[in-house]
Amino acid sequence: MTATTTVSALAAAHADGAVVIDVREPMEYVGGHVPGAVLMPMGQLASRVFELDRSRPVFVICASGNRSRAMADFLERAGFDARSVDGGTSEWIQSGHPVVRGTRPNAA
Image 1 (cartoon, rainbow, N blue to C red):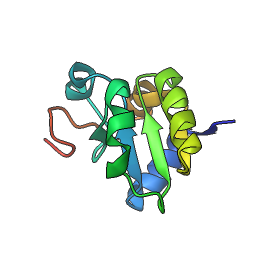
Image 2 (cartoon, one colour):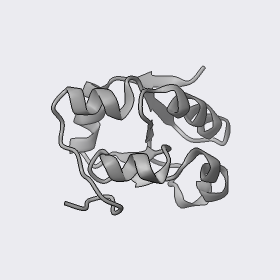
Image 3 (cartoon, one colour):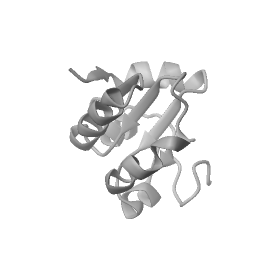
Image 4 (cartoon, rainbow, N blue to C red):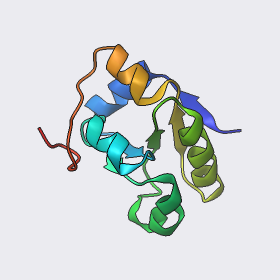
């Protein structure tokens, strides 16, 4: 069973430097993402899993939580402590958390 977490829990973990993987498509990511989130679209995650640190929890986010749930499940099966963010980027934005626009994880 895939572990899920809330936007509030992500915000707290994010303040402590959590690893955040955004599995949306590039155009969605450019439109607004969690500061520091690394873009790894669903179709690329399996081939890029080596980029992730198995010793740290990984927060997986998408637009609403559906894609992130599937990808967190994949990461759990691969030996990661992965958590899908319920409500995704949409809820992150609606909750008033900071958003970055552009292609880089911390672009202004």
